[in-house]
Amino acid sequence: MRVALFVPCYIDQFYPQVAVASLELLEKLGCEVVVPKDQTCCGQPMANSGFASSTAGCDTNFSNNFEGFDYIVGPSGSCVLHLKEHHPSEKIRNSVYEICEFLTDVLNVSSLNASFPHRVGLHQSCHGQRGLRLSSMSERNEKPFSKLQDLLSLVDGVEVVMPTRVDECCGFGGTFCVTEEAVSVKMGQDRIREHDANGVEYIIGADTSCLMHLEGILRRQGSKVQVKHIVEILNHA
Image (cartoon, rainbow, N blue to C red; front, side):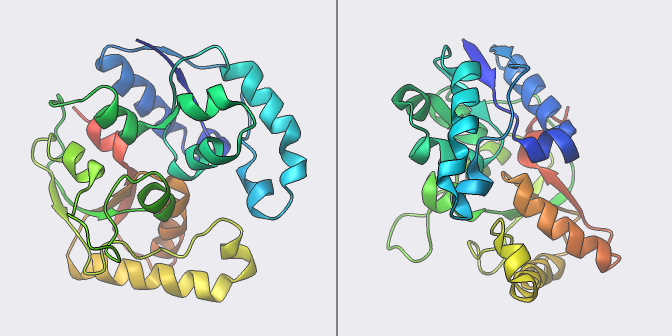
């Protein structure tokens, strides 16, 4: 299977290890992975700030880099959801997958050569949960499920502990963390307080933007808790 790896701009700049882990994991699972060299931002920050007309250049560049692939896979739920809902190309909208969604729904992964003997707290980001349906929503009367937890169950030694409020927002919200800084920080502190109560060593999730927000609060608190993208765990041998 030939797969194009979409690397969101903030991962490229701040968390390149997430892109490397995504590449390695997909190759371990038998995919031929291509990383288009001229890819840039997907346009989500402009669109979410009310400047959708400013995304035309991003849309065109994304099409030029990814139009020829049947599968486009990226390690960011919010960026993938933006592309699924707003990219002008129907082929792009139907071809792009968040990486956990791709692993469970397309590759049907049932085993992994991975080990991570640590106690981790799982953060389920809003876009992935409510937009991509990576997990069930507590406000709905539905059978609980989590594609992230299903994948983590394949990793030897990892102990996953969920916070009391399993699907509450961390407060990042893109530009929300800038325009409503105090509210954003308080929401992040509340999330961290629940994970701290569970005695976790790591907070993990599928959206590095949320993890970046939580990591900033953890560092300011002098906490020893670390953050990792889920693909870093799934790829950890």
